[in-house]
Length: 120
Image 1 (cartoon, rainbow, N blue to C red):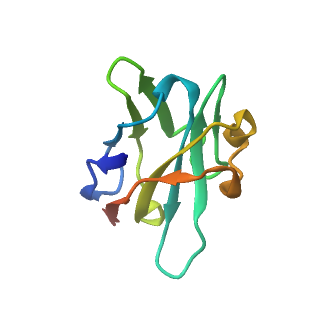
Image 2 (cartoon, rainbow, N blue to C red):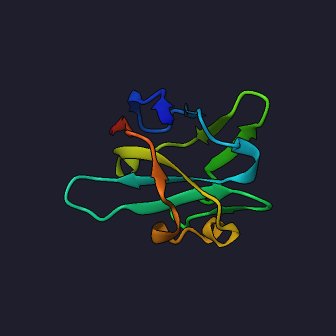
Image 3 (cartoon, rainbow, N blue to C red):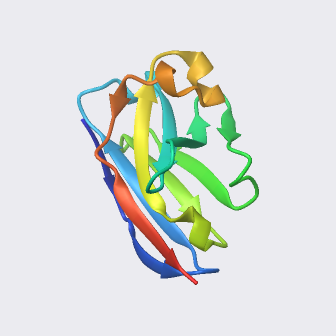
């Protein structure tokens, strides 16, 4: 029901846009979040879009989220990428408005992830 697209290999300083297409849900009602997980690390909050938009500290000012309710799609625009941004990026959905804060357990629907690799 959530499918992420657009990962790939980029160089440090580049930009990349990944998207998440949602099906089978009333998209407008959901908080849509992005998380990432690097090898050997815990899943980390990247950002979320609900009534407001919120970002994790490590990506503030570089990443932005946009959603197209007509296309049931949420986008993550990543600018000024760094090697430490390398991770599998997951989109997630929640009906809980508090999920915009980034609390992982509030999300009960997850996509399969898309790998972003940033070379130095």
